[in-house]
Length: 343
Image (cartoon, rainbow, N blue to C red; front, side, top):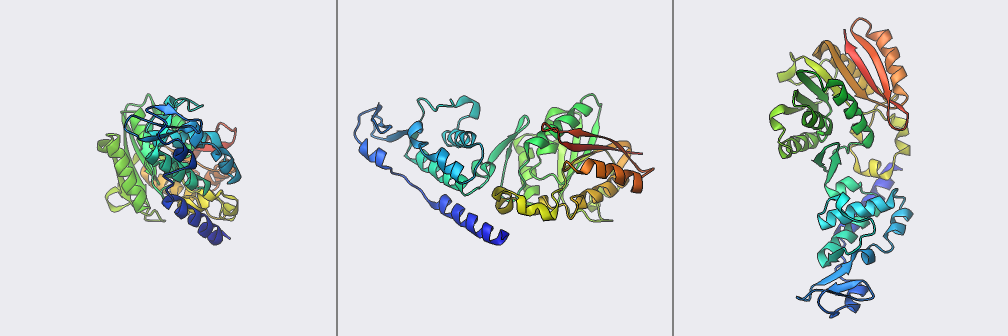
């Protein structure tokens, strides 16, 4: 089923990304309407004869197309794409698009991006960047897109360490670098190291660090974490004050319920947590035993059913090594975030 869905949606996306519609019936009917004047069709020309189309006109029908395609938050999606095409900050674009116009190239890009969104390409991949807390990150296909709940998780960790004098932090599975780089941006006393199994994500995390001017406090190693080979060779003897991770926690049999944006466009290795969703988290527990200082903390973002399971695992398997400190809820009142302490 997933293979057929993938072929279908990728086919739609391919056509969307190669389809440029530089002319519309409205633009042809408004030719020669005069410098800066607007026709009843919503088009205008300037003194050099360049054709412009009112954004309100260009957006007609797209809300319904997005809704028919199953895309949620249609107005937000359209405004994000309008802002991106016009190269303006989201909060500077009026909700009603008053006085905004597209030139021919912008109109073509707008239509192409919305076709891709109707094909369920993630908005973050279409735009190529995304805000996470107080930083803006470059995004890329196959690199996991951080979710809003992860921002809540990072805020919680930042709040816990804002008065610390110095924090030597490790992130397990950094993806685009969102969590580590947000920590570094907020807390100048933090130094961060990360390990990441995806080569593409490793490259992107390094690029994001450079774009944010944080590369001198951040290093990332391309490494696949497995039992008894938790860390790359240069880090095998290192210990840390803090380890953070948002490991894969989706149960394998729950993949059938994921949205097309996830199934087709996301790196599923960044989501698959095995039969109970804790396959990777268990390896992180063992890593923490070896690489946390005594009194150091492990913070994890997991599924809402996992904190009670983690508490039980700590008591049964890690007593005398790791203590379950507590769990915390996200904005939807789901128990998602876990804090563990090295004995």
